[in-house]
Length: 368
Image (cartoon, rainbow, N blue to C red; front, side, top):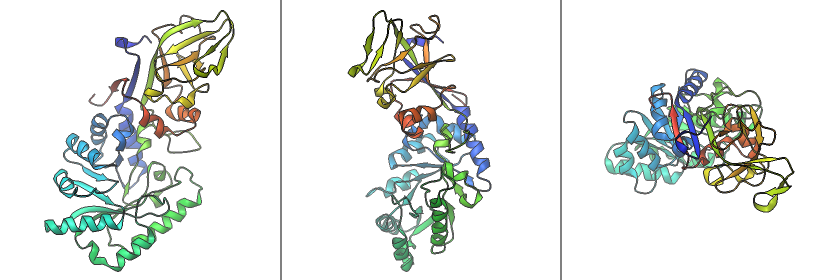
């Protein structure tokens, strides 16, 4: 494929694949409502484009991390429910009310502040209470929950929309933490007024109906990351990242490649310099272990990934296939995002959310 419009690299995002992934996850969620987590600009892929595709697929509930993300999402869609996972910031009550955002209350301080704001308005506003059952991150500890339920008047001004928790090890179905957290969550629910409940993330959906409760909250799986640690990925691939070959160097005497001279190429080798680097989210940890694909030909990354460029060994690829102007698949059909993450020693989440702003972005399918 020859590079379109002379741009250095192209990121293609398949909106139909996102919609198909949502429908699969909704089906796997059984009787539970399937929400969508679209924080971090829909995992780096563009909230403004992906959220309408998810809504068209039937999603009416969205989770973001921050109030700013909630405001941005409300400007995209007027008639959906939006939950802010990081909770209300100081004095943010009026913005939550105006934009019809529902805060997740993660601490006694959150609850007190939200109750005080609702009291001042004279009417309760919806909120979600988060119970920490094992992540030791956000959420009420079990001791804090006991303190809260000992004084139920503290919730009198809060319209309880749901109670949620979050799984730590859902991608490992046999991990004892899953059952332990489920038991803790069920115990916590007996201490609170009856309301909607939510626990399962992407991987949690695949743990079965016990974990679904009333609402599931998939995130990464929507964007093609596998929710199953061992086994084939059931999700459709959403992203394809291609970068242009800028130059081919024929090696007639042995030479080193890149910063630090970490790789040597012998006589008869060919080196392709490609327009992507760690400034674009192609991680430096892929130095000497990543790869690209030119058609069906695999080309190893040789030398260190630099800010704007990577170098590939194309010695075994026909000259007419590997030439300046040809696009190399860095993420694509032959190498999905999870495989790139494995080579980089990280997870697909980091790869997606790190994809830079310099790519030309093409949205296919949907109403793009």
